[in-house]
Length: 263
Image (cartoon, rainbow, N blue to C red; front, side, top):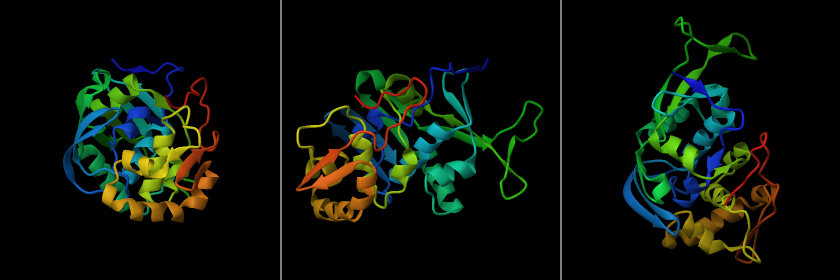
């Protein structure tokens, strides 16, 4: 039996621990890794290659899916328009979009801590053509003429667990996808997991490190953040004198009653 979500269970853009546990490398050119990552918030093992471009796609699918349902085993099924998702996630080409989807399907994630999120599996398990019960393909009108096919995406154990048991966050993922550098995206996402910020803001180098960047790369990451500074200001994120401050309202938005942002 397939049942739909209740109206007060709108899918989030992201969840708090997706950023705090460093599921996605803080770059748009991630490397293939098999690594155990420990942070102040928990411990995970990741085998695969997923970075900020992959986070862009995953968030776009959650926040811009046409419909979603819970299937028999408790996982979540999404009905998406792949063209719209590729546009929101700022993918440069269809081939790179498909390659990034493959990476999302293949990445093995084991969340060891915190206990409430403990699981092993994938963010995405299956991608296929959406069909009616009679087998006909579900399509959407193309503004340039004709129609385009919609897809079915089935989230994996990890993706479903995060949505069900983590703190949900709602924001405009397209604004983050439009940033030039992965470190800028990772820091923006990490900032949005907090309801409050330290007096005077976060230490810039500390933020770079907690997103998963290597200490030896601090100089390069600072340079990339300077290059994205004007774009970050438009999102409400200000970098000055080695500190980072966030002005609320730059990225968050309300969806129905689901207006909670961060922990």
